Structures are given as structure tokens and as C-alpha cells.
Length: 325
Image (tube, rainbow, N blue to C red; front, side, top):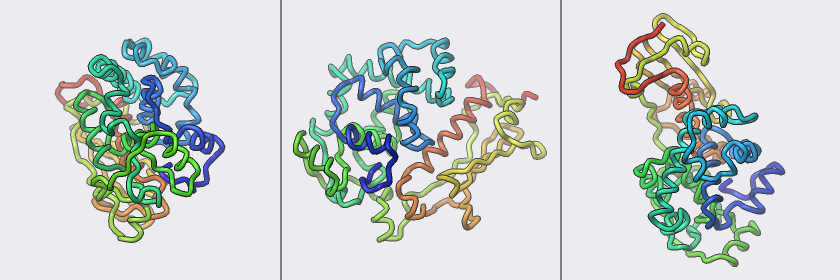
């Protein structure tokens, strides 16, 4: 929702017209949007908005004090909530993030004080953004993401964090012809700043003009943290057996790409990204301009798939890798 001329659904339009970009200083609401941003990884923002009340019910009204004390029974309850996104890794991350928010509140007086300290308490209006040159992330989101990760937060990468900053009003990225652009600038303290290391994560308009890649995507070839592979869990998850290895494919970016995952007999996980239109495998690729509304989604969806495989098919960290048939 970095632009205001998208064709939005009723729920998307209501969120845009009433909440998106309005400065938030209440800790619980800041945490609520942190939950939504984490849950959004791998999904559309509209889907997350439609499930907002599901998350509110599952996570005690986004009360991070309660969430920080969740036990295994609470995790089971959350995952059993009707309509809930079934991602164990995300639920655990939200619990951990709640614990970090509590620590930051104790150290800074409030989570709001910590977060708004990055922008001096004023909403940033970046040069060019109001004309449509909105990136997937920038230097500010990268710095905050780095600091939050060091504190132990998860699902707070630079792209997710930029979405979060837009949502909570630390950045005003409404277009200049959108009434909400002037509404926010006239009612809240703002500051105009030059673009901040936006480089490779360009806006749709900038990419079309320069015809340059949005980012370099280098699919990893890794072993998942030396865990014991439970091969019996792979097929129910959706893998198919081919010889001694297991193969899994899933579409990304609304079917424009296919992510292939292979787990070999040693438990090594290999991935490749394929453009379905050309059939080519991409280490460096250009997302078509028509997909500009989903900047960053390929990376988020990719990470979410691996997280789900990790949660479903691997157990007990710090154990030797061996097959369990």
C-alpha cells in the first residue's frame, strides 16, 4: 500500500482512509501493527487486514505483557483459533517480540519512545515519495531492523520494517494527490528529508525508468542448523520422493515465480527460483513493473516457506543430522 491509486477493496480502503500513515504512539497499537507486519510475511496485506480480529482474539487483544508470558498451552490455543494462520515460527516470534517490547519499555519508558527516537519524534516525508517513488525499504528501515534483530526480534527485516514504519506513521508515503497526505502533514509534526540509501530497492517508477533490477536475489543452499530430519514429515507437508531426495514446489508472487526446494538424504536443503514466463532460473532478476505493488513479497514469501518447512520437518536443534524413516 505504498501508493494511493491502487484499486483497494472495502477493507483496504477503510484502513487507508482511517489508519494507514497516522502517527501511532500507543504501545499496544504499535505492537498490534508489529504483529500484523510479521503475519503479513508471505501473504497479502489485505488478507492480514481481514484476519485482524482473528489475531486480536488469539493474542489477547495484542496485550504484549500477557503474550510475553505465553506457554506451550497458549501456543496451541493460538494455533487452534479458527481462521488463524498456522505458522508455529511466527507465533513463537510474536511471543519473543513481545518480550523484547517489554524490555524496551522498561529501558526507555515506552516502546513508543524507543521507536520514535529514530525519527526525532516527527513523521518523515521523503523527497520524491509523494510522487510515487516509494521504495521497498531504505536506510532507516535497515537500521531499525538491524537493531531489533540484535535485541532478539524476528520477522522484522528491512522490507517488513519499512511497511511497519509506513503503517505507524513514522513515514508519510501517501501520494501528494491523496487527501491523507495533507491531512497527516497538517496535523502532526513532520520533517522533510532526502532519500535514504534506497538504492537497490527502487520504486516501480524508478525501475521502469532505469530498467535496473530491484534487488539481487541469491537463493541459499544451506543445511538447517544441524537438526535431525524427520523424513516421514516431508511427504505430508507436500514433498514428493524422488530417489533418495524429496522435492517441493510452490508458486510465489501470484504464480509469476516457482520456488523449488529439495531436501537430500543428508538433510541439506537446496532451493532455486524459476521465472515461469521464461523458464529461467534467476540469481539476479527483475520483477516485472506490473508487480511493483508487491515489492519485497518474493523475499518474504520465500522466507516464510522455509520457516514452515523448518517447523514441520525438523526437530531438536544442535543434533546430528540423520534420517528417521
